[in-house]
Length: 321
Image (cartoon, rainbow, N blue to C red; front, side):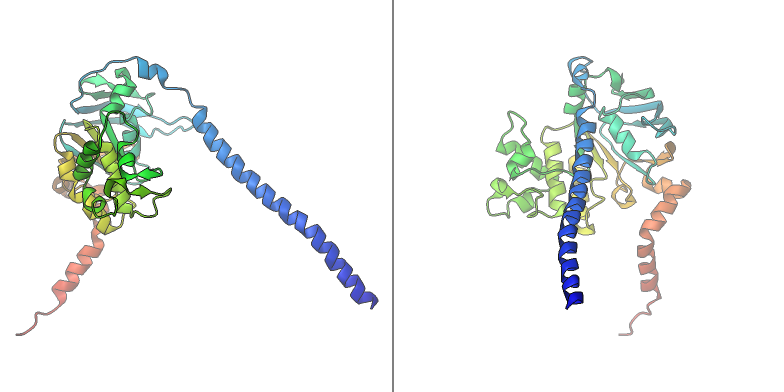
């Protein structure tokens, strides 16, 4: 009886001690999560304001001709340049693809074009004017940007496309949705453009979200459109729908498509191949397949399954009728 009583007493004491310890462990875990969130928020809130860039600078009429000349850019805290003596031109009104391995500098080019980073050396000119000299608000009013992950807030589809821009109406949202290829699924919804989107947009597929993001970028008719890995997270069917609309979207504007999927760039007028922050080549798809070893290697890696399928079909003997 003495042993049984001691055992029960020990178990009761252990339970009383364990519960606070488990609670303390959870508290430490919650504290670490909150600390990480505060640190991330602080990194945004403590950035220097862009107000001076918004109030000063030139406001040229934007046509969409872009030129990089001996441009070098290094991120703060690193020693290796993200872009190293980069030279290339994007004629106004053309579709221009940018491809390369991860970390090659593709998205850095897109960031520089948006004026997010301006501490580069060399020249980045838009219609003959260096980007550093252009008023930042004026620059961004002429840009449309679609990223891989685009936030849709709680509200109607119409509100998400207009995104708080004053003076825009339902007809503007419908025009942008038509260009983006989004009207087809919007009109099938019970409330059309008044359909309510919940937080996280669980009632929309990945392809539908991206088409709404493209419509949002198109609604103010930008001179330069930048798609930065905009289709990389989509399934093949959704990517095909978005890609089918690219020619219509690109009409009358400069279109820059940053992607690691070469299949989405084959219709581009020119494709820039980046490697370790440097330009390897600039040419149309067919030319790059012939003369650029890296581009050819990436193409073969991504399309090997198609080559294997064609080889299997060729090996099947014809049926005798």
